[in-house]
Length: 222
Image: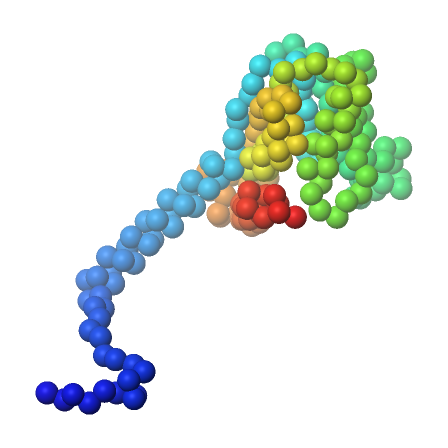
C-alpha cells in the first residue's frame, strides 16, 4: 500500500460515480421532459384571470383596441360604476395627436366605441424610464383617494402574459386598502398554445417571465 500523501497533504483521492450511457440517456430524457413541461406551463402561469367583486374596472391604455373593446363589454356586463384607463405618454405620434398619453387615447377610443364620457376617465402618468405599470398603479390610487371613492375592490384588465406582473404590482400599491382582481385578454399577436413557434411569442413570454421574476425578487429592494 502506497502511504505517500499527494501534493504535500493539500489534496487527497476520492472515488466518484459517473453515469453510464444508460444513465446519461435517462438524465437527458428527464431534462427534455422537464423543459417541455416548463415551456407548456410558463404561458399559462403568466396569463391569469382572477376577478373580484368590484365597482371599478381599470384597463391599461397601451393595450390594443380589442382589449379596450373587451373592457367595454366587461363594464356593461357586470354593471361597473367607473372605468379608468391608465397610461403614460404616447411613444409614437404624440406630436401629431391631440391625445398625449395612452390613457387619453384609450378614453377617446372607448367613447368612440359607444361609452359615455361620464363613466370613463383617463389616469395619465408622466414619462418614466422604468416601472411604468407601478407608476400607473400609484396614479390610480391617488386618483381614487382624491375622489374619495370608498371601493372595496377593483378589477384590472391587461393583455396576455403581462397580466400576472400587472396584477402583482397593483397589489403591492394598494396593499390592504382594497382587493385587486385581474382579467387577462388573449394576445392575438401569436398562438398562445404554440407561443414558442412565433418570434413575437418568444420575445413576449421570455421578457414577461424575466420581468415578473424581477418584480417578485428584486423590485422590493430597489
